[in-house]
Each structure stands twice: as structure tokens, then as C-alpha cells.
Length: 146
Image 1 (cartoon, rainbow, N blue to C red):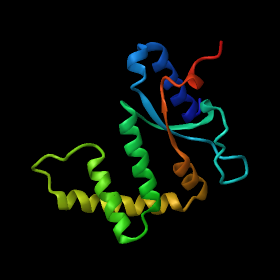
Image 2 (cartoon, helix red, strand yellow; image 1 turned 60 degrees about the horizontal axis):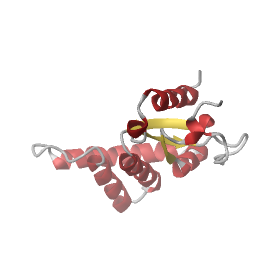
Image 3 (cartoon, helix red, strand yellow; image 1 turned 90 degrees about the horizontal axis):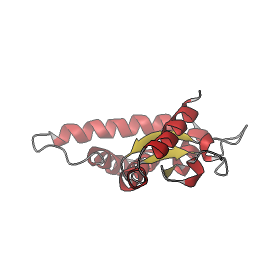
Image 4 (cartoon, rainbow, N blue to C red; image 1 turned 180 degrees about the horizontal axis):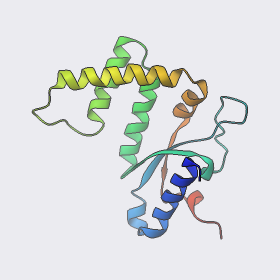
């Protein structure tokens, strides 16, 4: 089974197996497939065809990561790399008081530069990242067909 199909199935199973109140808290960052022969995402494709990158416990967490990935794509100058790096450090929470912030931020800036360059080298991937959406496990488009 394709990666996106497997992950979509996993997310759909979560909807069935987890009570409704809890499943509404499961969110995934997903991007539409590319229109065949182009670098343009097909936002009208069925949700089951989208690539699910990550699963998060809440919409806010998903939206924070979505914003980070968009920043990474756009980060080409020192100021935007620094801002994306700082966001990358804090996106998973506040570092421990004993953490060396200079080292964390430098590593994050290096990750932003390298990852951003790799992503930007593929126009299709860049477009998919920029059109990615957070999707709730409770989204009716994930429900099994009757």
C-alpha cells in the first residue's frame, strides 16, 4: 500500500476506534497530490489521495508545524532563516533551562538552510508544502464509504 494510503487508512482507523470527542483532537498535516505531469497540487483530489506527513494531538500543534514548514520554504535570507530557526526550536515546546540556546538555534538554522534548499529544488514539493492543510480525524471525507 502506498505511504499516503497507509497513513490515510491509519488516520481513518483512528476515527473508528477512538471516541468522537477524542478523535476530534487528532489532526494531520496533509498535502494534495500533484496534477499528473505538472508541479501543481490537485487540491480537488479526494482526501484519501493526499499525502499525510505527520499526525498531531491538536489543531493548534498541526497549524504551528504547518507554519514552520512554510517558513522553511521561504527562508532564503539571514533574517528569515533566523526566524524559522527560532520557530523550529520552540515548535516542540520550551527547551529545558539547561539547554544551550546558542547551539540549539545554530543547529536549527543549519536545518532550515539545508532543508529549505532541498525542498525548493523541487517545484512540485515546494508547491505541496505551500498548499498543505491540517485535517481533522473527524473530517467526514475520511469516513468509510457506506
